[in-house]
Length: 160
Length: 386
Image (cartoon, rainbow over all chains, first blue to last red; front, side, top):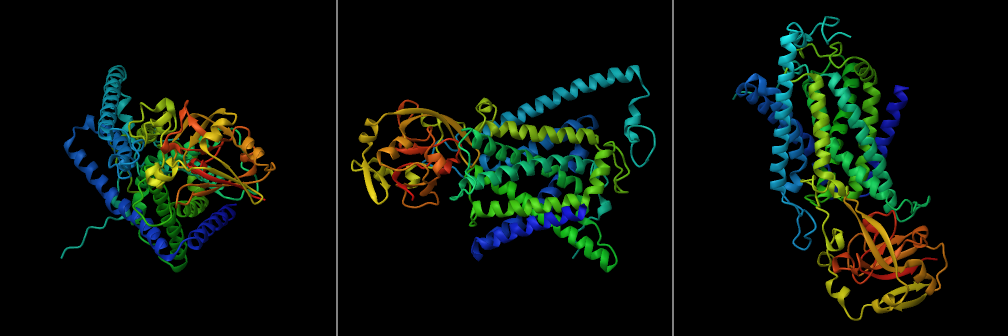
């Protein structure tokens, strides 16, 4: 079953490779290959280390209760900003076509960040109030959440 | 000279970087890629000249839906792919195993992953740039995006085949189960695995809301990062302007006539002649391959009426030629089922006004359920093919 699936995948991939190589000349193919490699290099050697650095610095600078909300904001804003690069830079804008890229993207981005920060902050406040109420009622429950590390079959939510 | 500190697989201690997270995010990434692939194939087929199986003309909003889905799922896949790659990043630094056989097997697996990651990033990045009409490359977008879609889906199927036991075990167990974790992945972070997953779904949802307004009118005001606001002459945006197509002079020339060629005989109509024929009004969407779409109320001559006047039989394909001097869609094929559909118009007006120059003045084709690039503007000639 798995071998069959693997063979099917390989077949699809080979067909795609043949399509790629048979329909464009060498110059254009070289350009496509450059973009293929560049994507991996930019992610693995630039974006991923950059994110590691940001998380490490934030972990040092931010007090513990702020770290979780900051991470949520960081993931949402980071991912959406990355995919908005083409509109934020307005690289495809054309003087003869006012219907393309026709928003104020800088203002839109600021609004998006403000709403994200606001919603996550509000959720964090509601959450911490709820958990402080809960922990004052059941003081023993909270710490067990932290213990699911390397204990297969151990107590807490880590066990099955 | 000191060496760069290259991390090892066990340098990464966060317990969030786990098979449990990778499998769950990967599942939804797989769903998005499958929808992208299926809708992409459909769009590619719709743009082909020959249709061995006729592309349906109904529902008129079919292509609007599938192409909107294509771009939306591609957009949602960006946060998913980022988190997926983050979860498995330590694997990049895994030491190669000992023994020739194991080395060969792992080498093959790693090669398939390299292909998968490279094509996945390429497809999402090139698609995003294309939807914003930014082309900083020399390769042919359509040919490359199409070919690499097959490579990406093939590599994805191989990846699922290789990882099936792990995927099954991870999805079958609780998200906090540690049985599949790397030995070093024990550090508790700022959020739990559930928290990270919820954050990922949130990021994907926000990415869709922030951009989908270009195809979903209800979201227009919310989609602050959408490529288009949806405004334009007659309430319909413009993909390529008359100036960019180089037709400003020929489209406004007093000597413009539409030629309809049937069996070697050429029939000619000026725009006034066309306006004197019975006018029909149809509400049809225009849906671009770049993902945006808008509905318009088009007025003009029913194409079948015009073909009847020229003595063309039903059931024949029509070759449509634009006033454009160049461009890949200067000449398009209107397949017989589209040419004969009652809703297909040679449109002369939009939203109760004469067609604007950027929307294809003096006359354009508008047919139900077709990619926007085939709704030829500035029509100069219709040739009925035998």
